[in-house]
Length: 80
Image (cartoon, rainbow, N blue to C red; front, side, top):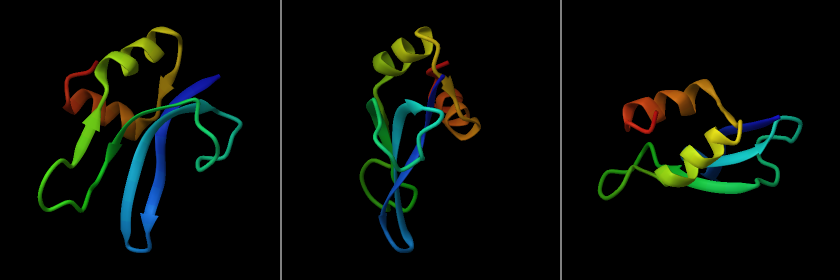
């Protein structure tokens, strides 16, 4: 089964997350099928979030299930 979830990147105490599509049995930092966007929670200037809405909707239509956190982000940015 496919899931849309956050994959943590960045340095210690400076998180940066990619929104990725991956299989459930893979580890969260493992290889992703596709990167849909990013979230930068500590950004002070510029973009804090970018999501490719078309690709996200396409993966949801194919059956990928977003995690709770990603679902909240999608609702906040009117993707779902």
